[in-house]
Every structure is written in C-alpha cells, then in structure tokens.
Image (cartoon, rainbow, N blue to C red; front, top):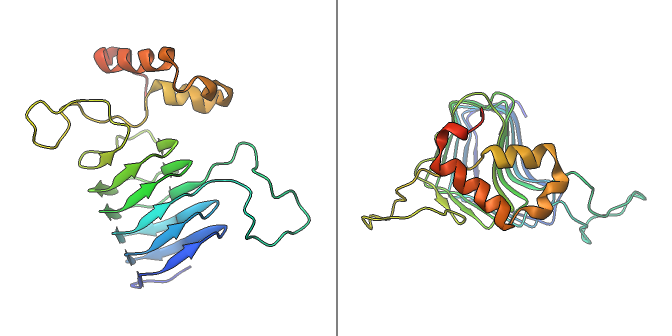
Length: 207
C-alpha cells in the first residue's frame, strides 16, 4: 500500500487467500508473476493508477475449501455467493494490461467502481466460468484479446474474429440479478437468447 514506482517480478503464490494485493499505489510494474489455486483473488487492484501488468499467469482462482489454509474454527467450506477472481480491479484508472493469462477461475476479470480508462490487449481469457464481469456506465474496449468461449467466425483467416466479442450482455446481467438461473447457463434457451442479441443489437440493454 502507498508504494510508488515499484517493480513486482517473477513471483509465485499458491494456495493463499489472495495472491497479490496492490492498493493505493501508482506507477507499478507487475511482470511475469504467477498465481495458482489462490482462493479469493489472483491479483487485487484497489486504487491503482498509471501501472503496467504484463505476462502474468493467473489460474485456478476459485472460492472453495482450501486444505492448505490454517483452520480458524469457522466453516472453511465454499462460501455461497462469493467467487474467486483472477483479476479484480476496483476504482483503478489509466492502467495497461497486456499479454496476461487469466484461466480456470470463477471470474477472469472483474472491473467495477469507476475502473475506467484502462487498456486491455493481448490477454488470454481461458475456461473461466465467467470471463468478464464489468459493472460500469462507460464502454470498455475488449478488442485484441483471446476468449476461449468466442462464438464468432474468421472469414478472412487473419486470426481475428469478424464479430466483436461482447463479454457481458443482458443474459449476464440477468444471471447476476438471479444467481439461481445459472443452472440454465449452458441450456439451448440461454444460447438462443445470446444469439438473438447478437443478431438484433436493438434488443441490447444498457451497460
């Protein structure tokens, strides 16, 4: 906390409650770090500005029972309603995220609380239960990243999808409001709703 112009490089956290907690800091360079099977967050950013995160590998962040943690007498089982976030960005501005991998987690990236004017490009979002949870009134540019759940096509074979990836749509907002509906996440009805939204943009709700 309250640390400026620092370098965090080539570290490994594994089976912890939070891999890396970066708070109230500016001008950080976070390179080549790994977070494996941590529980709450791989990287937590709280009031971070003008910083660079590159080539970090964050995977397996899930809110679950962790046998490696010291028991405190409280229930150490998975807590209902909580999700493990590979990258959590809270009220953080003007940061650059490039060439990172966020994989096999409850949520790949969660941006909220006026986390705006951040650049995300060249990142890989792989097999996360929810790739992105973006809570804001401003549009975030998601172009130039890899999405393992991309459903579009590449007609000219240039390696870039012809349809812009939209990580959060009206279906996602419905599932956030009614978590029990996640039981239908991979059902034909949900896939049909997503297809209809892509074909008829006029049906899209507000961000």
